[in-house]
Length: 230
Image (cartoon, rainbow, N blue to C red; front, side):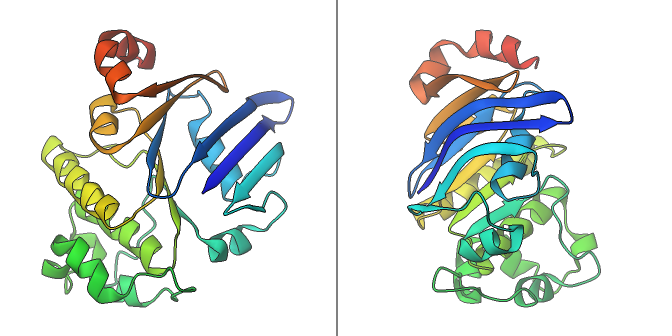
């Protein structure tokens, strides 16, 4: 379980986050949705320790981690999947998955990775550069699970993907969720978000202004799309 309370962040004198608070329970997929510049990526960077101009509490599995280094947070099970995907383009899928160390009992073995993400098994001899955008995104997620991530933090996983690849990514995330995946997604694609996630936190100007379930999103879809500027 991940719990965040009173999270505020700055870039110099400019305040980017204002007392953000939310929780992600084990086995949940949760989204942070909002316009560009709302503070979504800053929130993720604070969680993994990459943005230090911040205050507030970050609790993972009952333990306060706010003062920990990024490396210690990763070892504790926070798996960050950035929007640039962070895979090795010259290495094969197999090599991308076997190069990172397995950390602790939560690390997924290779056979489980390939059972959950069969597209990677089919492409295991291909280099990262030869994969489609969707396949690269799935590989990035699989790498984090292989390294022992207990909670995945995904930054705009559908950005730049063709609709058919978005559909493929959705199916793979739902398969991983059935396997017990816990994740926090930053996302602007509202329909993708409602297809995979349980709850949605609406972020505006650095503040969480609403918490929505899928039923509420369905009723207010047009209004929310206008709010997101899409």
